[in-house]
Image 1 (cartoon, rainbow, N blue to C red):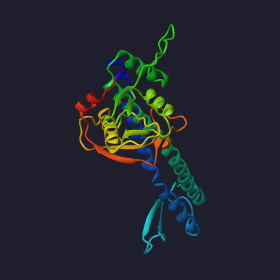
Image 2 (cartoon, rainbow, N blue to C red):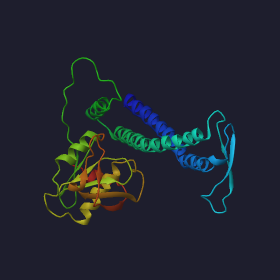
Image 3 (cartoon, helix red, strand yellow):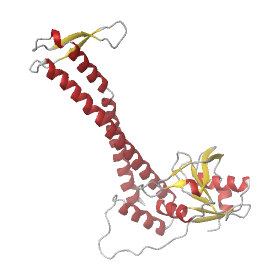
Image 4 (cartoon, one colour):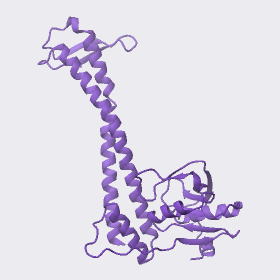
Length: 279
């Protein structure tokens, strides 16, 4: 557990720092309009510029009252070149803004994925679960793959529960298993997950039947119990039919999107979780 937790924690912290650095760069791009304004005002005042100036004092006709502003110039460039330089910087920052938004989203998604791995590790109990998480970190290149004979993958069952109404509930033990549960579930089954909180994917198997309110509440409680909010109360849990859960192309294990959902607020109960447990 210690080795895996260390690897995931180091990678998570590194990704968090990367996201913060990208956000700082993104903030700098928000000054791009200032460079376009400078280019416009230099162009509007070319008739009174001789070249060699270090500063152009010009009326900002984009603002009420046309206040005077000072525009820094490069004295080694012609007035036209100074205008072109500012327009070039504007276009550079505008392009950078688009790419930085993409990079920030990727870094944030990767950080969230690593947080989910740490949540898996906190809940793992058996050697089989730790081996599954190790393979996941190797497949996502956060751990070096073991040299020598390739280890045979062994299937292991998800945590299985039965609601008061007799419906089976499956709880994923890893991100990979979370994906498998959702992929193999009947489209009419219900999928549960804590809202904006890392945790296991939970499937309430309905076989086309309609579960009662208590069945839904118990499945939601299990989703909250097997999440980072295990010790909290009033935990928001989203649920929807499996057909509304989608796996984005190229997304990390356990990462999905969903819509047409409802939200239940539940408090995790260890006693109830043990009572409903089958295996």
